[in-house]
Length: 292
View 1 (cartoon, helix red, strand yellow):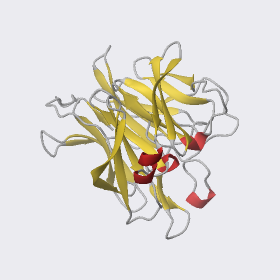
View 2: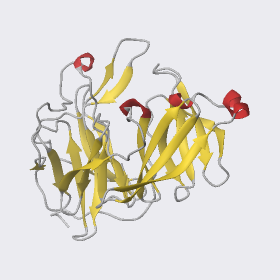
View 3: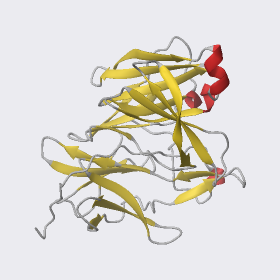
View 4: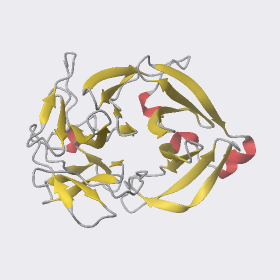
């Protein structure tokens, strides 16, 4: 993830273990390697299924944020909601801290099984809103997990009421003009975009409806194959990638939807399968440690 010019990345130690590191890509190679998680997570990547249709997944979800009240950077991490969410404050913490979920977890969503083939759920990195609020997809038709980085309070955010049962396979979460957007594929030719305008009161509003006419349907992929990955220009443009198959050496086509002109067009650039797209702004910010 990215926050105020800093990025959180995985640094490989071996085939089985990755470290979490914080870097500033503009100021040089200096990086801060975070200590091992209390949960024992190795931040491992792996494949689900068998070749040639294997899917790349991670065991855990993590992100970098900034607390505007205390002016410190924090990293959040989860790989088992039965264990809780782990938080590391850069510059003051020497170890991770565990934040238990404020509700009982009967069937933990775990990301630390030995074989991906045995797993039905995969943690993803959360959607970061200004680096202050994080939202996790949790394989639910009714809610997502949310966390305020300042008070480290974890809550359930209800998904919008769309007039019918939500299919969890049909929606994506992205940041849109510093708010959370719920992008729902209602059919092969229609996508609705809902925006969480009030996080505290959980107020959603339907802001955009993407409809392909019969001429566009010939040029565009089926909307069910599109995955919303990012927005830019203050939310005016939504970026989708088209998932045609799940082969490692496959490149996904990119489509851009302009909310002003209401047009969707194919972008010339393609993304290699499993590539992440992270909006990033450069800066000269650096972190403080006990050595400063």
